[in-house]
Length: 406
Image (cartoon, rainbow, N blue to C red; front, side, top):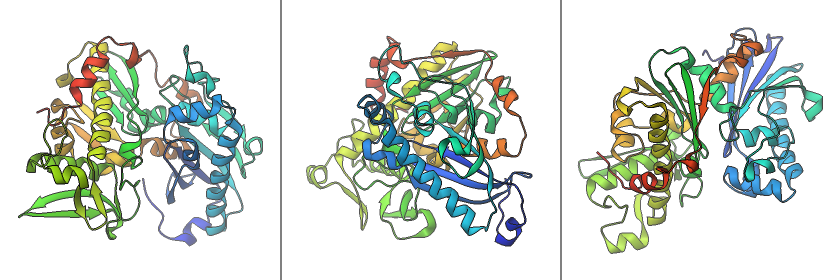
């Protein structure tokens, strides 16, 4: 995917389009050349709906309390600001198409539909299919809006877009797409069909609910190493450390385990550190509560992976390749992810960090590589696994909270 570095070159493009990844925590958008799929610029912002809570369940609760319109207004205002920013910066006469992917709840709120039906059994969404709308219907300054179809109430268009971007639907061997975010979504391609599940990991991997947590912004610690008796922190953009993102959290937990600062239960081995936390940089400290948040989040992901393989009647070792999606996945250290038990040991040497596949799928769709009709047949036969219905879930989840499973 090429990037235009010359603003003047993009000014000559007559048909500008925007790809939008509607994340629970972070909203990312790319300005694209519709003819070639080239990207001029990508921007990211915190989702302002987090005012009503950091995760999907809190947004559903807000809908049940009659706040759907307020949730819609918050995301709609942000999208309008993003579109105006692109239009003004690049002196565009207009934007032809906005292509959007998000989890099922975020997709509902984007078009102003209530997600309240997904708050209790039988978890009924208003819609799952793709939507094609005029921008005016949503009060957006674009000619046309296309929303990726969802798979189930808790496996959304972001995964459909990710499958489209990675083309795992073409694989004859077992392959997996793991989108590690607030609503961790997992897609397994095996036995000629798809198996889907979602794991309520919470927002820890996106920086929320971590004491010094940040999203993927400049100054966020995204890599931590211990060399010659010293801790070295690396940040996004090379700026001074001001917080820590998900990948840095994984590295830090792995480092603390190796140094014996925490044990496999996640407890600090030193009483004073347990009270004050472990300082990895001037403004970045990891607390006992942060470690616990990490344990719960990583257990949700790895438990979902294991149970999905059980449903497909395959072994973890049978999976030939694992695509780790999301901005978190872009910086993730595979060795540390396996060491801390975020990913099974059988995945060592098989993972590919593929960035924001939800956004990438929207960009790819803009270039017209596959039409809307083609998306309807993308998934084919599928099995949806509700983790809460599995009799093995509770036992596996508790076991997987243990750190260092190798």
